[in-house]
Image (tube, rainbow, N blue to C red; front, side, top):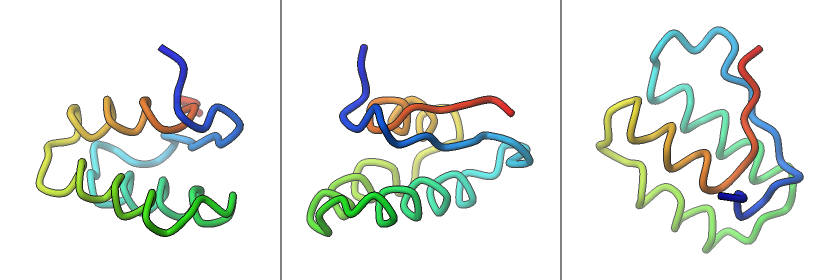
Length: 68
């Protein structure tokens, strides 16, 4: 599946399973790419309260990820 914003890349480096850090990193990347605020809020609604694995799956639906 291709992410909604394939030109935005989020690194998983140094996250160590920290869900909040993954969400923050993704939101920062979305903001820097000038994604509309309402879409960023849509992303937040989908990921808040989820565990790391489910958050990662949601992130991959929105942006490209890199493991390093």
